[in-house]
Length: 365
Image 1 (cartoon, rainbow, N blue to C red):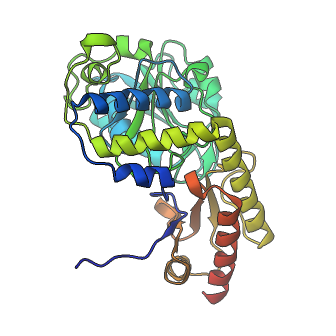
Image 2: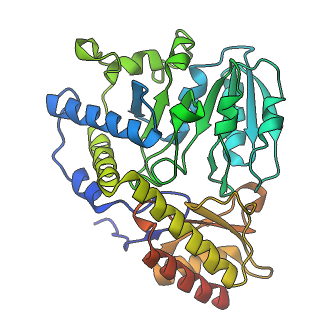
């Protein structure tokens, strides 16, 4: 028999605990991907995604891929050889945008920022006079920084704006239409409270009209995926691939759970949990990593105290409390912790649990 691991409290930047409604939905009998019942679930899921994205985009759907697949879909459909992609880099996932764009043939113009700082909109807009796309991360998972996207959308000119909302969608305000987002991608395992495996994705009409015909990836071709998701409506729905029916059933349940609570209430719950966690960490004498005024409520980055073994603390939390927090990224791997308050974990009890456990773990390290 395989080993059954104990239940974990996952407070890092990776997979979150799921809403109970999602766990129940994942146990539903598996049905066919062309079954009318599933098609209705898919349509319901797409409508729920429009709500959390703050958009009316017809081509809003769950890509059968993780958030990184959403990132690749965004660029493979918008840039060809020699097209200029201006990308704001203030963490690991801005860097990853650059690499994906480069592999798609783009001429990448990086606008680098110190990790832990928000995007400087003026520098990004001034980086090139006529880019094909501008890429930016709304909620940088590697640093816990929240950047203002609206000014980029308001001043992007003729460029298409691509936005990573991986650690914000479903827990923080995201207004794709109002902010001028042309392509947005996210993931399911963070604020949405659903297991990893899907990428909530949205495409504006402008981006769809300017898409690359026959892009390098058939699987991620939004011209084909839009038809599969019923974007054109009615009898024009076309078959594209075998959808992950159970995952989409789980996502539907997660979205229904969020909308039943009320999107504004869910966002307020995330803000409150993040603020309480950050206040408690400061009270413990710890220093927060992200710039003040730009800290993500859904993911808090905190500096590891001098003389404390980061890995030992994380191991103590896992072995003694079944709590998993994340290490930092890149050069900050051993000097920063990342603590998530996302989905069902964004609540006062989780804050109290993490703060108490972390205090004990640091003392024992």
